[in-house]
Amino acid sequence: MKSHIKVIVIFLSTCFFACEKNVLDKKPLDVIDEELVWTDANLAQLYLNNVYLQIAGGLGRSLDCATEIAEGGHNWHSSQPYNTGEITPANSPYSEAWSHYSVIRNLNEFLSKYDMSQGDETANNQLRGQALFLRAYFYTELINFFGGVPIITTAQALEDDLNVARNTYDECVEFIEEDLTTAAVLLPLEWDGAEVGKATEGAALALKSRLLLYAASPLNNAQNDRAKWQKAADAARAVIDLNTYSLYGDYNKLFLTDNNEEVIFDIQFAYPYRTNDWDYTSNPQGFGGAYGMTRPTQELIDRYEMNSGKSIHENGSEYNAADPYINRDPRFYASILHNGASWRNRTLETFVNGASGPGIYDEYATSNSMTGYYIKKFLNESNPIIYGDNRGNENWILIRYAEILLNYAETQLNLGNDGEARIYMNLVRERVGMPGIPAAEIGDVLRNRYVNERTIELAFEEHHFFDVRRWKTAPELLNVPVHKMMITKGSNGTLSYAIQVMEPRIWRDAFYHLPIPEEEIDKNPNLAQNDGY
Image (cartoon, rainbow, N blue to C red; front, top):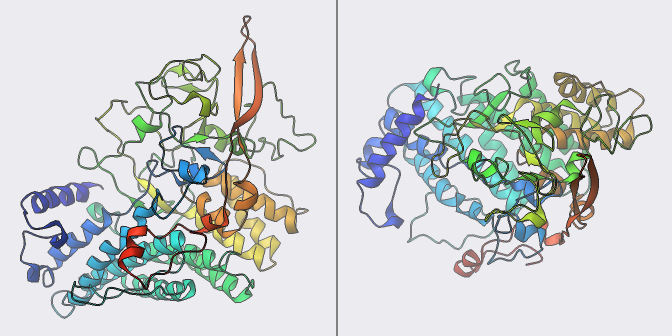
């Protein structure tokens, strides 16, 4: 199913290494006559395949480390300027998202130049559908990070007027929605064999669900326009009504089983042609020199309910602070590595002076920011941990069906349909064997339960970073210290657990959006900077 990755990488290697043009003039197909690309469906697909390779995601970016549920594990991690309040237009770690415009230019060129009148009509429509989906995907990332951005639909040349002003957020949403609506009509419901991984009708509709949910949320819908929530509900419902996707039965294996029935769109990896580096960067310290990045905080740990469905703070939950990791939501054990967990044929030691805990010598360690936890979600125990020899072969899921079910539940909460929202929340809970949410939970209680459910289910999948912003809960969550679990082992082997402050966090309202990079502002006098920068 991943053989197309091999084809893409071999082809691109030929293209890039054979070319000596100025880097500013590079195109994905430098060594092939450009005109052939616009008249040959196979070459055109390779052109778009290169665009797929530009999609970002994975544990390297770790957006959730810039929230209260995780930290990067090292003071050089890209999330730290957010956590310390040091984001500026000249120091913005995720500002590389602005470079999406170079990819958008390639897509605009494709959409304007590819000859739709020649060859097979179905193949041509599928090519156009992919290009529209990809343009919509990159624009969606831009507006999620920056708010309203310039809408550019032509492949600009140096002689063109490049001083384009920003469009409003709502104008961008309307533009992206139109691209996705058209793409959904042109794209197939599924691809076969080596074509798996390309955009589908379901991917276009699912991305539209996310787009419109964000547009209906408090950050972007100050007046709480009910019509926006209804549009978002209809978009999520359209994915559900395809009857194509379902929840994968085993949450533990969901992220290690490529192209399963829950996956709607993902980044494809295929060893040795394209690999990820999560094994070395994110396995616990003490295992083969791994960095131990993306460390859950106590704030996230405390969100996991007991397997009875009760919060750890709820009367009758039977939570035991002296043995805090028993009888928790099964997603806790699938997602978190904690003291005493079995990992790579060892028992994990995150207590002070334990093999993976604070106090031991490791030249990469920042022991004062250890949380007592490491990530388990996405990691494959059987992959070797060898610096510079990445074997990670697991795809990175960008959109999955559980998100769509939760999107729909959120729209129903905001439309006043608590019963309907509960049904779809319970579908997600039932997959892991968690009890259903009682019918007595309504209103704000149910909303709080939804926030918790979404946070737990989608943790570390680059949703929470945007969720706390669009819900406008960031000021209360990201302007207070985060906590760690400090575990000490007595001489008799008894473990003592103490929750302590790990580090302070700083929030400014400017952080609802990234600053536009300073160099872009300098080049374009019509490009207004985001507020607060």
